[in-house]
Length: 66
Picture 1 (cartoon, rainbow, N blue to C red):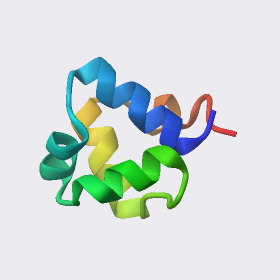
Picture 2 (picture 1 turned 120 degrees about the vertical axis):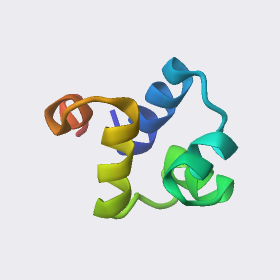
Picture 3 (picture 1 turned 135 degrees about the vertical axis):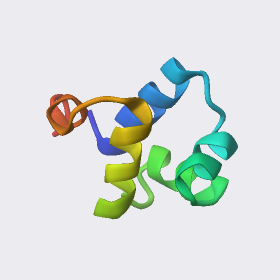
Picture 4 (picture 1 turned 180 degrees about the horizontal axis):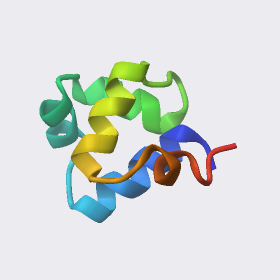
């Protein structure tokens, strides 16, 4: 699984739109879309924000990432 796929999976589980996720962590909807499609990857600071928002550990976030 890629980082973008993991973000999308967690976002959907949390019931958030791309726009709402972006608002929660301080990025645009387009940035979230790019992450999910694998165009870009989030900076470390955004990964920290994602882990905190989704209330998971780094190990849980990266467990299936390859």
